Image (cartoon, rainbow, N blue to C red):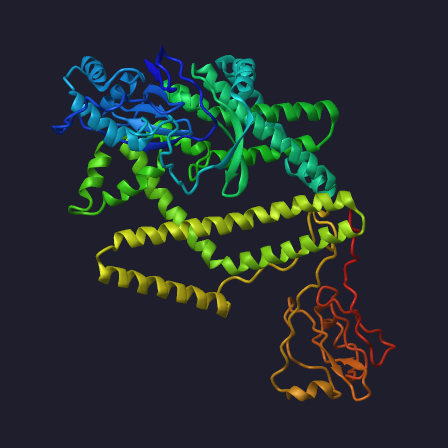
Length: 627
């Protein structure tokens, strides 16, 4: 039975909670023991207890991985709270009109043990008020301002795209796709489609054709966004098919990247099978969308539909990764019966510490069932080293990443501004899209670095409070690591930035040159028996130094007394090695052997020119920039 606390006289709703605003659920754990301390408090003059506005009591957490049953309550701001049975009974007995004495009688009747009014007052003041379940004494309105979890890898800035009523109508129309017969047909058709696409047709060819016509990239991008929206309706329709009530569909920022979400908090009222169906509903609808795209290709012959099918496979793989809070994370959490896996990282790691420090963590971990402990421990011991390795790899390549991103952003901003100045409004607007696509990962890196650094600093400060030696040791270790990393960055031990490349999609980068950059070349080693200055003197015979087949010819020019530039002696190319015994020796003032075209962007000298002038034109003709 659910109590709806809206500030007025309570009304009892037998099974259907009032849906709240959108937002991904964040689990707060609050466990209260049934053994309550005796509290001598006079409660006659205490105001009538009230539930916070919009609070939803979802009931028992079905399929829980905990040894003791847990109950679910959801605040109006989207935060989800786990309660013990006793706390849930207290919250469900508050109707906004009855005093504490009446509430204590209700709790005692449902609990099977006597719970005094003093104990009820203690539970409300010390447990439910801090969680935002009830309204603290002295507050006039029912709007609570309880603290929210500041999760590192959570969605921020929620905005509703489809309200709950519209989602309910669309989800009801799509529930037939979750019937077993429909699922079997869709999966069989998807297997046949993949066999044809990857084995017979060639999955990469449509992608290459799209890249050859950059304007089609926008079409594929629109199809990808449509696939993401359809993905969210897969979650909503699966939630409704399982007997739960879906909420709204909205968008937010996940590490600065725009992302979509579906409010399916009500699935915690149903069993584990229903929650897993809801978790997998998104990727299942991705499969349905890809089948629709394949059908569109067979109907029209346009290959960009197959490019969207190919990219859809990567979207499914990304969603199934359990590292961050995507579908794979919630699938693993529902399999274990633990809704917040990240909240178990600290107790699992501390439980490995021997002695009294790890005792509390071992007690918390012992509250999980054996199967849940196995899943959670395996996830923690796998993901923590993986995340640490990814962080170290990013720090090692930080100069390379920052240099490449800054160079790309400067070129993008310059080309976009030039397009607006030249009156190319359409090209400039498309360039703005490219700027946003470059700024998003840059802002994400800055945001994640600041958040992670702040968390590490606060954790280190708390753990070393009152321990000056430990704090000094940690500071010394951090400074040593920072000094070593800074030396690696400055000295060039870390990888160098990638060479500048022409844009793959020129339509997104207006004004950026599409010409191939000049190829880098290295000078061939000089013979050891020659003096360095001998390269400018005439030679009586060709050099007898061996030349490897893979060596490149260099064309480093030297300045002659008359001011003209004459090429220095070069190493013969492998093509000229076979003719060296038939051609008489020549002096260096004559034309040197012609270097390979890939060795240098400079044009080779002709035999009739005693003092050739190197050209600066590139070996590849620039292609016209698409507008």
